[in-house]
Length: 223
Image (tube, rainbow, N blue to C red; front, side):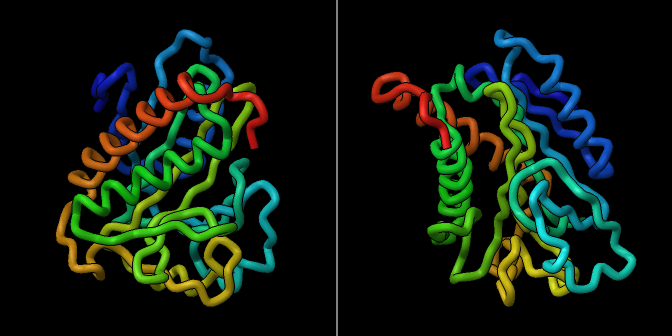
């Protein structure tokens, strides 16, 4: 299902799709897009899969068991995707949005914090450890790929999951990192509801930070 979204963003709700197919579709989209093409957000859920970032270390995969392990071209270490988790892929023209890589990461993290705040949860980031945390437990992971000024991959937010598979890895490369989800934080909502609310929060934050970029600084020196 596709929605025109707000403020020029196209939002696509893809349902349940295997990780590798969606990754290949993102790569193709990014290769073929032009500067004028609208930005897109893809909301999706994946069957159980571990993904290891481009420079990720296999030593952080402790026991994959029967869950597939896929090498990805995103940044970051190893993470887990599975049922009860919302994944949003951010296919953006960051030059047109006047965002640096750093401000893009900040925008994505802050959109999650904004959304969780609307749900009554106080969330925060950690220096040097991308993602969003609630009571020192990670609830949202982030991994991006930037090429020719375009981003893809994106973020995940744990809604109501079996968190056991996270025991098979050092999540995001951190030994002993505790993982949580919305259900364990007392928030009762469906993944479909989260997809809509989180994509809107993401669009709002991206647009606000883009406007700040236009008025305050250029997008040079990304990093």
